Image 1: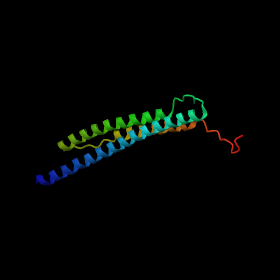
Image 2 (image 1 turned 180 degrees about the vertical axis):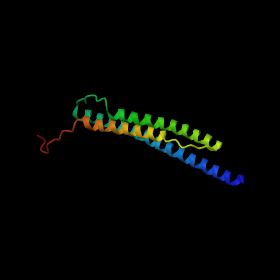
Image 3 (image 1 turned 30 degrees about the vertical axis):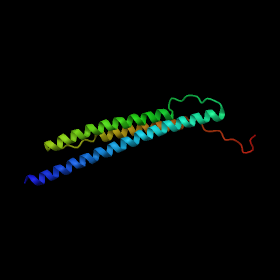
Image 4 (image 1 turned 120 degrees about the vertical axis):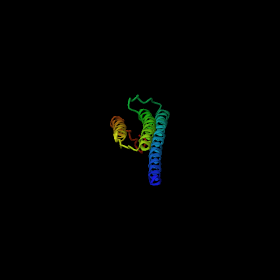
Length: 136
């Protein structure tokens, strides 16, 4: 009789580990994307200043800010994933697993905040001026 319980518990632990690894994979993607956004924004800024010989005004909601927020969100997500994994592990071992959705809501709110920051960046970004083809 203990064999079916052991197999079920093993499957639950493996599912818990897969879930944890999915959160880590998502965290790594957020961190990488944040670094890419911050570096690409810096590259565009330097390119603009090199071509036009003018300095762009500082914007509080820049690509570096959004990149930093994404990196921080990824780091926080890794910590939350480890906490959730350990909590679930203990509950599986005790046989009283209770699903908890708050980590889903926190992640949703953080992603909405990041999306809002990106919208704000798009809204306040100055449109590029078009050059005429004749060079005049």
